[in-house]
Length: 72
Image 1 (cartoon, one colour):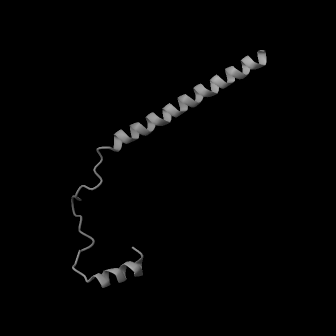
Image 2: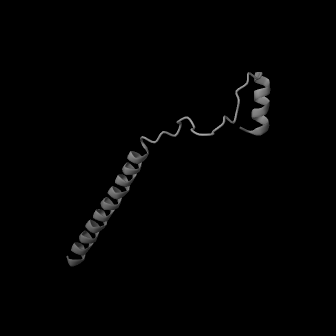
Image 3: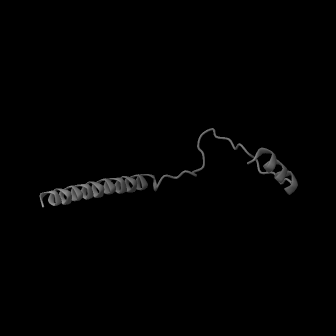
């Protein structure tokens, strides 16, 4: 009987530890999401930034050739 009570007590301890760790992980992820939710990654550059690539009207064959050659 005492063995069964110890087993149940250990199981409850493990369950509580699992719930606490899972809750900490969940709220940590939620805090990170809230932190970066309003972060605008695609704002236009400021300062002395220059445009690196120019979109020319190239024929489709030339664009495909560059795509396959460079793997981009």
